[in-house]
Every structure is written in C-alpha cells, then in structure tokens.
Amino acid sequence: MTNKIKVLAICGSTRQSSSNHNIIKAFTALSNDIFDVRLYEDLTHLPHFNPDEDITPDSAPAPVQDFRRQLEGADVVLISTPEYAIGVPGTLKNAIDWTVSSLHFSKKPVGLITAGTSGHKAHQSLLGTLLIIESRISEDTQVVVSSVRTKVNNQGVITDEVTLTAIRKLIQSLAGLTDGSITACLPPPSLF
Image 1 (cartoon, rainbow, N blue to C red):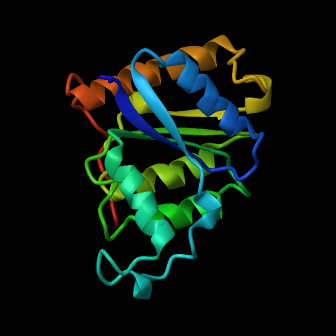
Image 2 (tube, rainbow, N blue to C red):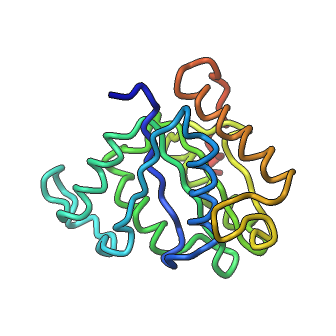
C-alpha cells in the first residue's frame, strides 16, 4: 500500500542507455519519497498514428489502448526526451498524437525535460503540443538540460548543481500541481 503519486515516465529516446533514461533514473531516485515512477517501455511498439483506426475508443490498436490505460492509471506524466535535428523524436510525437482525440493528457500534470546537446527548439515545439492538448504544465515543471552528457552520468546521478537544483524544483512543483497547492499553469499557445 502506498500513498505515493503515480508517475508514468516516457523516454523520448529509443536507446536503452540514453542520457534521457539516465535523467529518468535520477528523477526516480530524487523523488522516491513522493513519487512511484513507472517507465513506459513500449514506445516503439505503437503503430503509426492513423485517425481511421481511432474512430471509437475500442477501435484503436491494442498497443494504443494499453498506452492509454497506463496514462489513465497515472496521476502525473514525466517526459524526458532528446532533440533530434532540432525537433521532437518521431516515436514520441507519434505516441502523443494517439492521445489527442482521447484527451488522455487533458488536465494531467506533466513534467517535461528536454535533454540533449541543445534541446531548446524541440522543447518549445513539444511544450506547445502538450499545452494545446490541455496538459497542466507550470513554469517550474519544465526544464531544458543542454550538454546533458556533461551533467548526468550513466548511473543516473546528476553531477551538475544547476541541473540538480532545476530537477529538484521540477519534482516539488509537479507534486504541487498534483495536490493542488500550485495552480498556476502555462497557457496554451495561440493558434494565430
């Protein structure tokens, strides 16, 4: 029995030993007293998004339905992703596309970490996507970790004090968004 907040962590990298997996390890260790973190492991098994296969809630492919069930069971979603060619990795964007019509991110507290060489372009793009589908993200529940390989090691330990402070702040803010003690969220982007 646990009163911990249930977190579904999604790694945008498909590499098993990626820096983003290491960030999730660090997040898990740093937040163990608050969060019960589960890693979503089937990102590469989701079929290409096709709205023709998503007419009714039961018509979506089985891997998509499983992904949605895991999202439903989580209080919070944590995304840690690299930046590929100044954009969002295709497998991650594909997963999110499968949730647009089902509203599984709507009103869900989300922590967003973009960790790569730079990360700023992909971060802004993904942040916009998450906000337009009504994810609850605050100024402090999102962070860019540039030059990530110099800031987190392969054991999932953050070795850079500025990054460590930012991740600790993200953890506290994400808990606050979940328990209602923090209510200020970023607004959705303008469509015009």
